[in-house]
Amino acid sequence: MGQAVVIIRACRERALFVDYLQRRLPDAVIVWDRRRDAMDTFLLALEAAGDGPALHMEDDVILTRDFAAKVDAVLAEHGDLPVQFFSLPRKRDVEGSRMEPGRTFCMGQCFYLPAGTSRELLAYAPKWPRRDEHPTGLDLMVSDFLSAHQLRYWLHLPSLVQHRRLPSLIDPRRSKSRQSASFVDPDDEE
Image (cartoon, rainbow, N blue to C red):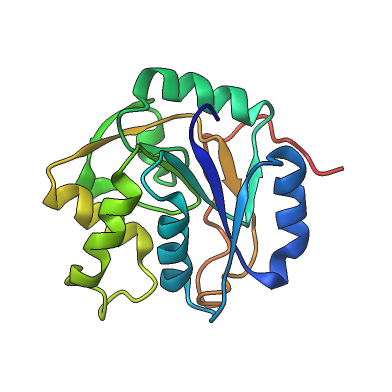
């Protein structure tokens, strides 16, 4: 992924999925959840990114074939911007890849932050006014951060990862049907 470090936020219960990702992304940094706290794990991931560019992802994704090459191609054009590599809103996927206002940022499955942005987001976290209201809302925090700084992001389609159809470890009441309609060409498990 060029200069970007790949950071996988992981839960021990999903070690098999982490193995799948590590076989495909052997240089990835794994940030293990230590308290069953998605926000805490995200803050650790932001810290692990330091000042460099970082591709942040969750452990419960399936990659598209040639994932790294596809990411590199997108970042060659848009690496100075945040980039979202997973899209959920099916109705808008037909619009294709595009610039989006920060307020629309949604989902934490796989996204890129350019150099310095992870550090800035880490500094923003203690001041985030909606933390008590959304204690696991890392994507909402990113959205609010982008909005507060009047930043836009690149939404890449088709999605380069697919969210596995599993119960959420954050909240098992969440729907298992949170998959991208635009995802193609899965790098199937062996």
